[in-house]
Amino acid sequence: MFSTSIDKLIFLKPQKKNKQKRTKSSELINELYLSHAANLMKYLQKNYGLGPPEPEDVVQNVFTKFSQLENLTQIENPKAYIYKMAVNYTLNELERVKRVQRFICEKTSIEEREFDLLSPEKITENRKELMALNNAVERLPSKQREIFIRSRILGHTYKQISNDLNYSLADISRQLCAALFTLQQAQTEGEQ
Image (cartoon, rainbow, N blue to C red; front, side, top):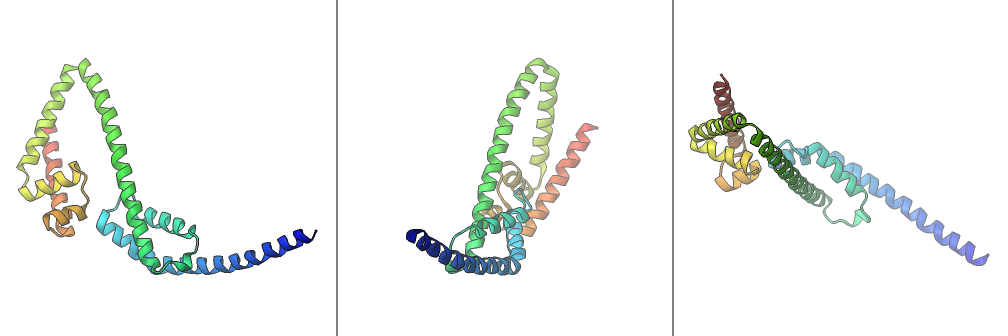
């Protein structure tokens, strides 16, 4: 009986402290979210594009995970911690998307090969389309061609391309849009 009452006393004291810690933690999270969520989304959009993963989803997931951490008040620079969490989460998601795309490509190419074996006409048609696309890519200006290959074929982010080629993010976006428009026109002309 005596030990039970001591256990209850011990149990009640930490519960009161935990409630105070939770209140401080939730206030910290709310303050951080209101102060930094919009800027974090802009940062992610600028450096990694609109998705996938979508910057809004990244910010939501990061703040959810951040809120589940112990001792939030002991983190020296919560803003830097959240930004680092967001970058890590984004990079992990980008890698996951690439793995999924590779898997789909592998499965699709197997199915296409099996289908192509049944249809020589389809093989000829696909080869012509591939040659037309290759010719259209070769006719692009060198800057557009380089950006197109790095972005759409190699899967580089705008930030990576900017660092490698020393172009601004806006210039990369403009050049890629122009390249895609040119390639779409070439495809449309080839279908007619």
